[in-house]
Image (cartoon, rainbow, N blue to C red):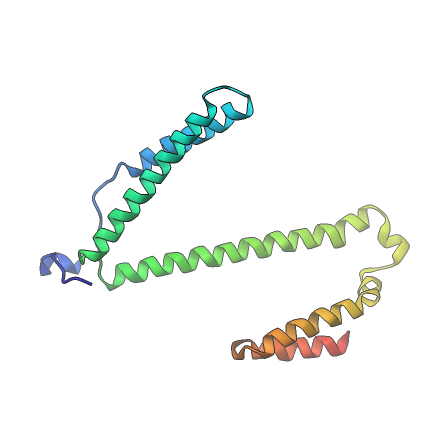
Length: 171
C-alpha cells in the first residue's frame, strides 16, 4: 500500500468520498435493461438493443465505481477503521443471507411436512408427528451419521459432532 497523501490532521476523521453520479447512472442502466427485457418479451424490435445498452451502462458503472473505490484505497485515503467497516459490512451481509435462507427453508419444511399434510388430512390417516418421526427414524439416523462424519473432520464442529452422535443413537 502506498504512503498516505492525506495531511495528518485530516487523517483523524472517517474518510467520506465526494458525491457521485454513479447511483443515478446505474438506476438508468437498470431501467434500460428492464425496459429492453419487457420489449423483448413482447416481440418489440429494438428490445434486445435497449437491453444491450442497459447492460453496457451497468458494466460502465461497475468498472467506474469499483475503480474509484480501489483508487481511493490505493491512494491511502482509508484508515484501519474504514477497512474494518468494509469487513463488518460484508460479514453482516453474509450473516443476513444465511438467516434468510434458514428462514426460507424452515418455512418450506413447515409447509411441506407439517401444515400441508395436516390440511390434507394425511396426518389423520398416519397419526401424529411422533408417528411420522418414528416411521422416518432410519432416514434421520442416516442423515445424523452423515453430518457427524462431516463434523468429525472439522475441529470447530466438535460440539455438533457430539450432539449428532446422540441424535443418531436416539433414532
